[in-house]
Image (cartoon, rainbow, N blue to C red; front, side):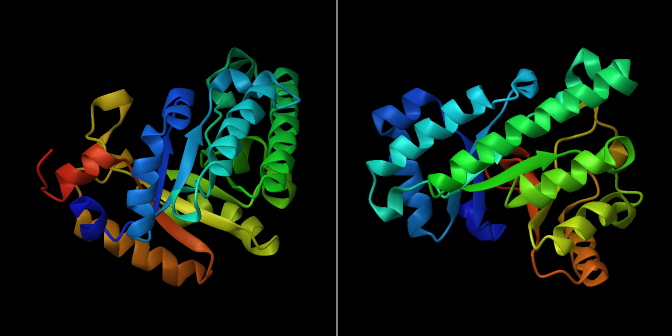
Length: 242
């Protein structure tokens, strides 16, 4: 909680197993955050879910969250879901052209189905995306933002041209009045193939804040927000006990 106060965290994207939700262990965490004014979103997603045009696995996870919420007072409720499905990790993506197009089309259909379901259950629906869909699948990116979410979270993985990497995503978000979240990577270089330029671990918190301030000015979009990936490296950067 010291970490949340120090970094002014207003939203947390947290993975919950079905067991967490059913047993009530998740509820005490959500309530504690609620008392601090921090909204909790359920983080969910597997790359293989991109194959499901009906969004079945994703909808099943959302159903568990909706069921959990039905048993909670307002303070203990999960506000929404953060969907992290990564079709670019699948082999069809690497095959490119037609295989990639149909993979992404199916992915979008599944996301659309899940969005309708989440909205019907009073859950906000955010989708985590990489920065490169504007180059690889521009039309899918636009449709995703226009009609398949309440907002997108863009993984900001390259410190060299942060504005340029997010310009189209923010442009679509502005056009369709959706939220857009810029997620900063805080894990140290060397982990998960990360290089120095992909993360703020070495650059430090002051540079990260300067970047956020600059992007805020450059985009001038009131629905642009910022997030950290993730809790452990954030504590390390704030020099809090691990």
